[in-house]
Amino acid sequence: MKARRKWSLTNTFLNSPKFVPYLFVSPFIIAFLLFYLYPMISTIIMSFQEIGFGEVSYVGLANYEKLLNKHYLSALMTSTSYTFWTILILIPLPLVLAVLLNSKHTRFKNFFRSSLFMPALTSVIVAGMFFRYSFGENPQTLMNSLVGLFGIEPIVWLQNSTPAMIGLVILCTWRWLGVNIIYFLSGLQGIPDEIYEAAAIDGANRWDKFRHITIPNLKPVIIYVLTISVFGGYKMFAESYAYWQTATPGDIGMTIVSYIYQVGFNNFEMGYASAIGITLLLIVLIINLIQLKFFGLFKKEGE
Image (cartoon, rainbow, N blue to C red):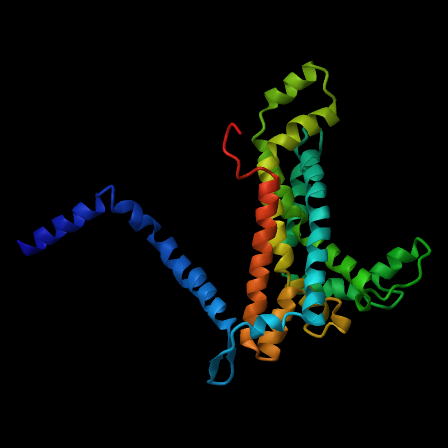
């Protein structure tokens, strides 16, 4: 009798429209609390502490005052430049390629889509080894051989800031171009052909269709790609590590995340590393809020 009543009570809960939605979202809420909210709150607390071997002491804003040093400012400048150049390339280029791959007149579309997406499946460390040797100092390396075709002297790519940034951006473009093409292709699939046909009847050429139909309809995808590009640019670490590990000459390849790694794991200054992490979070948050405001994402319909 008790077992039947217990089963009836359980069955009532499982069929309750008030209880079931919370049951389905509970795994996400638990994962969010354990793996996102708790580490973030812990990092905020640690940023006000000095953490030693078994000793923790409150130091107020001392870790944030240490941010005004040349290493942090250099890392911030490198991450900002890297984010700017990757966005400048990895939004218009994949957009144009996606339009070409979506055209009925393009042949071998599946081959090109697969070929361009393959780098995203490759380990960044393996790819980094290839690019590291390609950007070597010897005249026989791949990049120096290519620039030599234009009469340019061999370049010391990874020891100077501008060539090093070119190396980072080329590695990023090679790796993520296919992914962004997939995003734009999925957006292009949702634009009805009837709109293009109606525009053609009105005398619109290809540039008019691209400017007045394709771009406006892809606006949500462009905003999404821009948002994840800002996040991806500032959190870049693996590409820099593949080129220089943690010893970057003159800080030329040191990004914000590389600096966090160096401070936290090499110098074991966890409190200071947490303060850098909090500033990184705020920078990415503020930039994304500004660009979302600029694109009018916070406006209500009809405004």
